[in-house]
Length: 220
Image 1 (cartoon, helix red, strand yellow):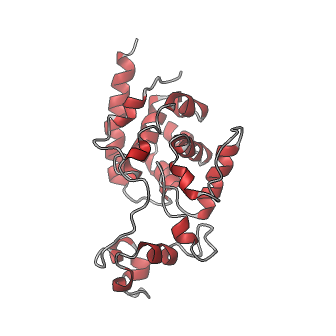
Image 2 (tube, rainbow, N blue to C red):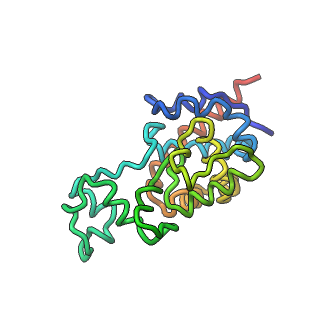
Image 3 (tube, rainbow, N blue to C red):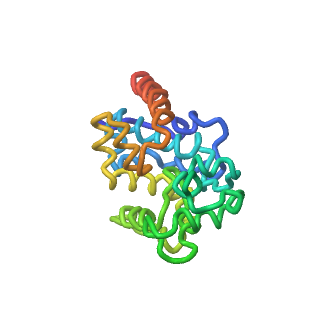
């Protein structure tokens, strides 16, 4: 069974989608069919819910690291909380400096500047050089002309590839299987690396699942 979808099915969940995403869903049926996302309403709903959460309703294209000083200990308590080695005032509203510090030495970021270069981008907010390499490998498997995401991180946002990057990452991380089990916690860990925003992701899922289920029933 393949769920039939239309670009507007995705955009209908976003009040003001970012211009970068305007054409990202033009070939959604073919792209999501390729990666098995449209095999069931459950898979499609879980995938879409994660996308909507990660992008703030299709508004966010690149990770916003412009944090005020009082917010930094909440987001990165390890660095800025009690016992942390860094002064939040020194990193407030300094996105490049912040990314190159909190993302340094992990997620494959080894060279100076990697943290900011491979900050969150795209429909699933791909973060860290390892994840860009992982997504590039998944994307290049059988697809001619796929961009080099490591050499050109901004290509994650290209309208011709944005959805394919997200879907390839999704499939390669085993998210179709987790979605089949309706295990949103495992889906979230695969995408986010933790459980950040689990309640909000769950709310998106409930909304999206009902909408897709109704659409599927109404189609001849």
